[in-house]
Image (tube, rainbow, N blue to C red; front, side):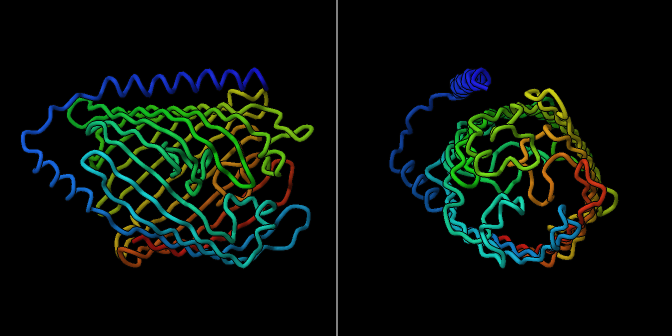
Length: 374
């Protein structure tokens, strides 16, 4: 494990050097303006573009068929995130938000329920600062959603790691795009987690923004300093020995996606394949999803299905989506329907059927989510 940590430290140093190399290649010095007053007015006008943002999530959760003859789980949860977002001058923007959560269950149940967030709590959600080095390059600092494009098999989008990331896009032809991203983050999971995450991603997007388009995304995630996660019971379905993880977690992930439109129905197909290069056994995972429709429009409906097969060591179970009851060592199916009530509110019903490896009886889960975004 010490060798793996040294290797990750070396790789992280490489990422930092890449960041500064990108910056040096994209920053072009701008001559001072002839009209300082006009520049000051433009900056003041940009800085005044600050707005209030908020999102609300209400959830009803029912789980049956839990292992070890555990009683069915029924609970209600809610979360409000709110804050400010705006511009700082002409090339900087910021986001700062707080989080309030309340649930019918207790925080002491979050471990056994495989949750990634506390049911009851209040705290900082985001503190993010971004520098737009150019129209195609962004450097960000702070605590925010992970800027990589990952599926729920690898990452829960509700998590808020803290760190630095640099993203650069390149135009290839008229509408094709190449996207590069590198970053280094503190995981900041529950219970004093001090994990570190080195990440890199390259994505090729064919006909980006067109009605019919496709993409291929290759990602690498390297996790280190995982002792606190194991000690606090967040090892979950990964293999543990003497209170530590048996495997390292260096994930190589390939996502293939296609989008088209049939009449007024957008169709999305996604395939995600992952291999843990730090494991010697049970190290592969796959996810396939298909959806039709768009619930983000008033009166819009979306139908979707997904299947997952995740071997025990394929992903770091502490960070994969907690919508699924089992985070690895399982196979399962998901079906959902979502409805856009208006431009602010939407409703989603999700049904899961999951079978953990080594068990004969499946676990079933129903999630009813009501969400609003301002």
